[in-house]
Length: 405
Image 1: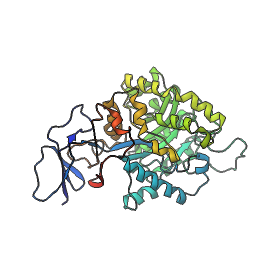
Image 2 (image 1 turned 60 degrees about the vertical axis):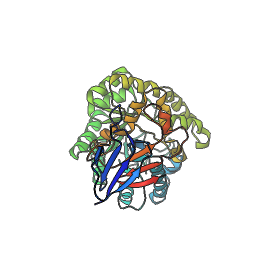
Image 3 (image 1 turned 90 degrees about the vertical axis):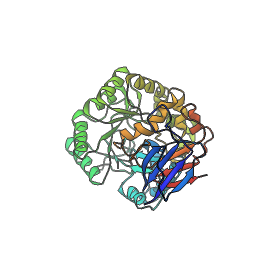
């Protein structure tokens, strides 16, 4: 039995506003055995936390592991064997930043998950959606206007097209057969897609309901890309678990989400990153106009959701080299939210969204020992997590230490 004791720590459990008394964490075989004043075992390893702030590992609930090259059009032309090398690097770097869990929002598959499970590379715990589901001409349909239909379904690396209840149901079943932890669908247009107006509703109610039903049968759930109030309302009414982005929601949509227990995953940093790098990314004039539409409304959407009582997770939605800005989501959120709410978003709320609230996102007896330590107190100053972009001096995932300095 491997036993480790973290000592001299200021411990935040992922939920409470206050720190835990005691300053010690007992870890046995990758799980937390006790928090506070712990009873020492005869044989154990002791790690001195040097009065650092010890907290659960971070959770990015909107990550794209296979989005290695910055251009999504380029990504869709490349073999997965090539993208997997990008994914390995992106995931390794995310772990170094303190993210011990990520939820992939389209693209990651069983092979990538299995490689991590088998220890072929180090990275965050991975929950994946497989390819996201899109209607023809929707956000996941990457074909340009001049491309003629070929008589076959469009299947790319990050998404695939399925139309009608029968085809959507079959696509959902295939996604789950391939081991996906959740299914992603597109309910509105998006910024980088070439043919869909951002505000156009996508998928019919019967198609959405079919995907939700298939996911529920397997104990999974549906995450929904949705910018507009209408798309968020439909998603909440039809049983999706999370609304991704949600920049254009209004009070009615936020209240409907709160009543239905639907989470919101804002991704504020991606809009700032796209604006700052529009030229180098080759962003089209059409995409730039759509970006302008949503960029200024993201903060307002978070305020509306918080006021309505929606549970808000932490996500980034970054592409290629922009993944280096992952922790800057804390900076974006700091302008509109209290530090404790942001911390919960990136820990216990994210864990609840992933249906793993008892295992990750908190420091409690029986939870997996996903732990990071930082200097300062992010409950008082959230910039501790992003200001100098230095990696956390201590990172542990499932009891294994990945950084200690």
